[in-house]
Image (spheres, rainbow, N blue to C red):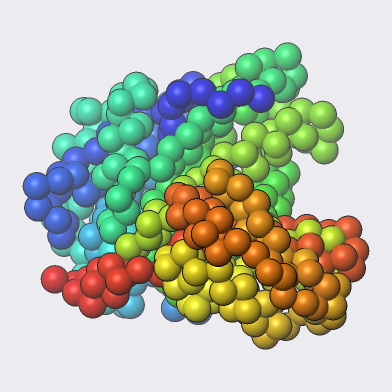
Length: 407
């Protein structure tokens, strides 16, 4: 497998475009469109929030029906959540606009929205945005990058990646883009994400792979403890690479799974590090836990604690906050078995060992914690399982951003 320059348009047969439709923002693009030259096998994962946006229910129906998917239209600025029947009508009108412009069935068009909850989408602007984008659809890297920027809300950087791998003697490409900065909490995948590949694979296997991969990628990130109403991750495979269709778990499936994991992990880490107001990526790695669930629970508790996040922001090696979060996580362990370290590019420092605090160099601790990426490493000494979770520090700017989000 090789990471290459590119994103959503890197696989064969996929095109993208973006437009400034004036949905909510002015002076910037706020709609994106991704299409395939041929119908795609599709898979998806969605928010576990009971309050689901209209677009989430629309896309779930497509991915669960067995129908193909051939296009995705995304808008930023307004979430189309808590919008009743009018929200579903916005989905229908958007898909119908694609049908009119491209001639593909409306029930193969996915829609996704991100932004303010409880506002109605201006359907005329959505349809106009589709008409603007269709003539601009291109397979270039630049088109894919522009699409990844158009779906941003409070994000400060766009997120995209592409990789290549081999399956059935053919070169396969997998690309993706995502957005996410706030309302990020591990409980599905907590963002908008779109993945494309020219692989040929059976739908059931692809869905199984996607559902498995998110457990240790998108489900392991948190920014603020809020699980969104709009979380959507879509994967489309058009088969244009020409490999023999993968119908069982073999070496080709394993190569695809590795590529999918790499792409999702990269996008997840990028979102965690770009949390609203964040100044650094906060990583927690738990090793030698009794079970995989324990490792996941403990690492997520560490990065999810507001006190831990504030300590990371202040470069304060107050290790008690991290142990406290582990203690209320729900996992049962003996603190006398635990070792805790701080790590970054600036070095590694142990601060707690087998139930006892250690004397440590406060200046070195601060130097380690001043880096852009900081890891709390915990050795449980109780088993062989491990997991890593990602979050960000808690800064003054997080409150500022969310105090006036609608304005």
